[in-house]
Length: 219
Ligand code: GRF
Image (cartoon, rainbow, N blue to C red):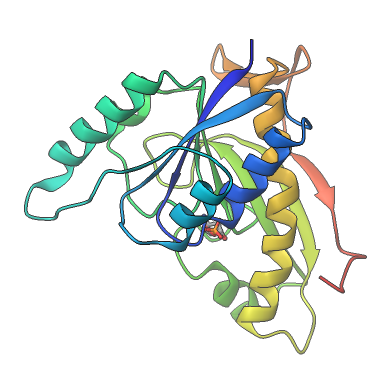
């Protein structure tokens, strides 16, 4: 039976679309059952609907706080029984108890070579540090922000004339390749997080897998 994937977004949803397309074209043996956004009216919701995916809005209301938000989000997820939950540009920080409920089933993509540059403005940080390479990381979600075990990273070159937008676009093109790949591994049971460590194809993954896109400077 096809594994069920839920994707949480807050904005454009280009990673969500890449995952959904990989499911639709059969490169991943899974289906995206729902796309949930904490913000109404974002472009990712329209993209999801155009792809024929059910969408839900679980609005963040600061007056009601995180507990109420997580209760509503938890109810939406329970009803859909996802095997995999993919955070894809989802801009809310989830509490430890919430994240722990989905340990080993929840993935995130972060635009840096973690553990470098957790949090926001990663491309700006890489440029300010004059890094020669940068990239994105797909990791299991833990209570600590952007600190869960990393499964796969993409490496891209940083070019001398790069603006933040150039670098962001180059990294994003690779996100759309590595994120569906890791979701496919998790959905097919090749990847797991157990006994305190990440396992891929029956072996412990001591260091993150890396895919090198540095020769690919056109993107
Ligand atoms: C991506 O760059 C991802 O790494 C970060 O948020 C961005 C989301 O972009 N977590 P999109 O909504 O998938 O287009």
